[in-house]
View 1 (cartoon, rainbow, N blue to C red):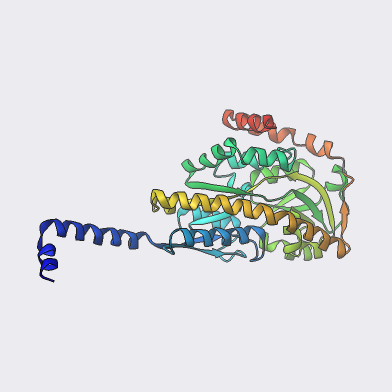
View 2: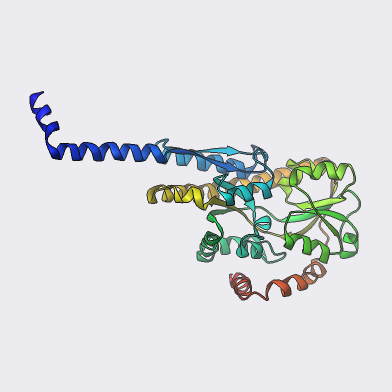
Length: 332
């Protein structure tokens, strides 16, 4: 005991003790809960992927950090949560790229119609160095890009008639995301674009405020849109990904080691999400068929693609956007 007391009284011992106390204090100061927002329900593949990421972060940081997943638009609709993440009110958000296009130029490119030739093409772009460059390009705009999630192919559905040609689209009031690109796309097809929050679409179709919308198979069924809009036309006009981003403010509060943990957890969640996404698409498609919905596959896509020439001409006046489009098209 006396030896121990003499050691504590030594100046060097106080240096060691103070350093240890400071290290503990700093660890406690940065330990925190991170809030992540998603507009889909709890059993949706993106939400399940976020839970997967949350578990990995909790385990890798020995419960020092934890992620709380808010699904079903609990923190607001997609555009609201994106704005809150930009402001640092929400830490992380999973969003489709279309509404992010007003903030980040690269996101606008990824939401362009008929840009990706197939899902293989999409994955080759996002999974390689070009995908990492695109994620890195978010940082000057207040976001840290963590990873991309699959979001399927978006197609037009409505309550009025089958859509097989541009003539069938003409005059339909179609809900679009709050995105300049999506609004211009629908207008170029001859429809009347109406921007509405995702959570209001089913009611808007039921009350005939709009005629239909455009989305993926899982969203079409999960949201119950298939119950009020029985005609689903496989236009597959976009194959844009979803993206997982963190606010710069939350990112800056992480140590270098913790940043690596968050990035790795996000990347692992991407792989997990991709595995369960395909199965969810198949189930959704079969559920719509079983309900008697009419699926229109015999579509002449060439006129739809040709109608986008004005949109591409406008966005490609920006040299950076034009170069990114060309690089994406060159990927095989």
